[in-house]
Amino acid sequence: MQFRDLGAQYRALHHDIDRAVLDVMSSGQFIGGGPVRELEERLADYVGVKHCVTCANGTDALQLALMAWGVGPGDAVFVPDFTFFSSGEVVSAVEATPVFVDVDARSFNIDPVRLEEAVCVVKAEGKLVPRAVVAVDLFGLPADYPAISEICRAHQLLLLEDGAQGFGGSIGGKMACSFGDISTTSFFPAKPLGCYGDGGAVFTDDDEWAALVRSYAVHGKGSMKYDNVRVGMNSRLDTLQAAILLVKLAAFASYEVGDVNRVARWYDGALVGSGLVLPKRFEGYTSSWAQYTVQVPEGCNRAALQAALKERGVPTMVYYPKPMHEQKAFEGAFECPGGCPVTERLCEAVLSLPMGPYVMQTDVDMVSAALRKTMTELT
Image 1 (spheres, rainbow, N blue to C red):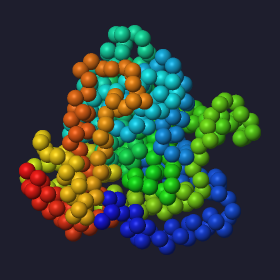
Image 2 (cartoon, rainbow, N blue to C red):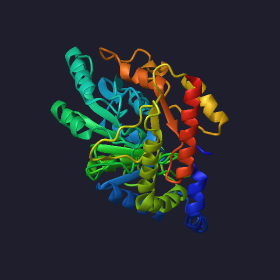
Image 3 (spheres, rainbow, N blue to C red):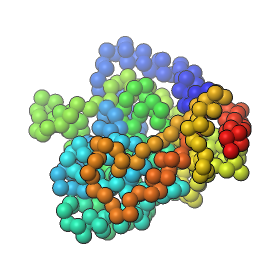
C-alpha cells in the first residue's frame, strides 16, 4: 500500500498525460510557451483571482510574495508554529523576523486569538514593525480567514496565504488561494494538485504585485529578461510540468476533490470510537485533504504504533515532529509569551494515514482495522 498512490493517478490519466508530454517534446519548447500561459489562466480562473504567476516551487512562491511587498530587516512576520519549515524559512531569507504563533488544536491552523496577542506584544515591545501574517492551510483545510482577515485589517498587516496543502479547499464556496492579499501554492508531487517534479504558483488580484512577482521570478527583469531592473531569482515552472498540470487540473476540478472528501468520510466512519482524535469538520469549510491526520491518545507510544502498522503493510507519516520555534535555524527568534503548548502537544500526537482520491473503501477498512487492532495490542 502506498501512503499517497501517485501510480494509481497516473494509470487513470496516462493517455492524456503521455500525449501532453509528447506534444511538448515535439515542440522543442521546454521553458515558457503556450502550456505555461494556459495553465496560469486556468489556475486563476479556478481560484477566482485576476493573476496567477507560476514559479519553480512553493517555497519560492512565498519568498516572491514577501519580496514584492518589500518585507525585510526590522519587520515581523507572524507564522504558525505548527507547519513545514518553508513557511518561516522564507521570512528569514528576506532578513525579516518570524514570530511563531500557536495553533488551534482541532483545525491545526493558526489560532486567531493567539495571533492577536502576538501582534499586540510585538507592537508593545517596539523593536520590530509588524508587517505580515503567513496563514497556512494545513492538511488541506483553509485557515480561519474571516477572523484572520479582521485582525490584519485592524493592525494594517498584509495577509499571505500559504495554500501549499490547501489548494482545492474552500470557505463558503470561496476557493483557497484567494483569501490572501497574495496567496501561494505548491505543486510538489504529493500535494493535492501535484506535478512530476517541483512547481509553484502565486495568486493575487493586485496588478502591481503580480508584475513585481513576475519580474523577481525571472532575475528581476524589466521589459525583457536582459533588461534587469532589480535583483531577483531564477524561478520558472517548466513547460513539461505545466502540460502535466493541465491534465491533472481537469481531473482535480472534475472529480478528485469530491473523491478525496468521500475517502475522508469513510475514515470518519471507520475510526469513530477508536480512541483517536479525528479531524474536525467545520461548517461551511471544504478541505482538499492533503492529509488525513488523527491524534493518538495520551500515553500511546506513537513510534511503536507506526512500527507495528508498517509490519502490517500500513504506511504512516508524522507531519510534523518538531515545532518551528525549536528548529535550530530559528534559534534566538522572537518568543511569544506563553509559548506554543498546543503545537508541542500536536507534534507528539499527530499521525497521518494513507490518503488520496484513488484510495478505495477496502483500503480504508484495512487501514482502520489494522489501526484498531494495533492500538488494542499496545495498550
